[in-house]
Length: 180
Image: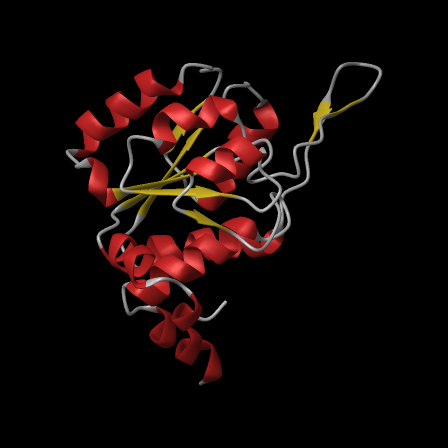
């Protein structure tokens, strides 16, 4: 993704961001749920999403996760990524959104949210930049400010992280650090 391909309004919104909130199933994963005969749950997370999250956090943008489901696998992955703001088992995500906003002292325009399904719409309608993954429900895509070219669990979150880093003029420094 090249920032010049993004509308100026989206770039302006991304410049203001201090927090990126992510849904899990369908955003950080492809939305499939796997269970073994003992009821153990398995999820696949894309390594590029994880690296993008780590890079974005280095620039000072915080990450939070709000999921309607509760999963030990999610807790473990978020811990591995250093994400402290993890809220699971909240189908009405507005309550956790309000708590995060209050705790961090942020304005709605300083927050982006990435979602894929109807549960995500209440927050998407409140934040400064609402984003849908490419394979999101069509209604969710309709209400999103921007849609990724990648699907959930397939690098869509990395695309969002790169957009924010580019808009905030951190991307070239990040890339150049790997070219030394």
